[in-house]
Image 1 (cartoon, helix red, strand yellow):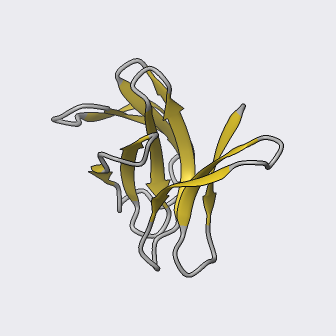
Image 2 (cartoon, helix red, strand yellow):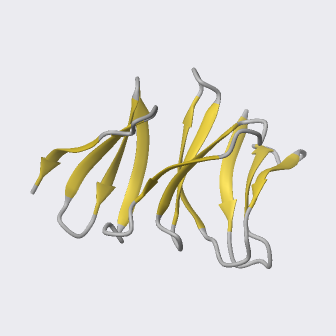
Length: 118
C-alpha cells in the first residue's frame, strides 16, 4: 500500500507518497520555502489529495499525480485545524478555537458551513 505525508523543516517542503516498506518515494507536490503542509485527506474516487497549509492557512488540493493544483479556500480566521476528512462532495475539518466541525464543498463555488459547534 501507499501512504501520503507532508515533509516539513526542509528548504523546499513537499507532500510525498511512499510505500509502507520504504522502497518507493515520490514527491507529489513541492512547495515554496515558507509553506508547511499540514493535515491531509485523500479522495480516492476523484483521485485528489487535499491538505491545509499550516503557514498560509489555505485549503488546497492536487491530483494524486501532482497536476491540477487548486486553492479551494483561504481560512486565515481558523488557525488551529486538527483534522481533515472528505465524504461525498464535501471536506470536513475540526477547528480547535471553538471546537467546531466545519465543511466546504469540493467544487465551486466552495460554499462553507458549520456542522456542529461546541
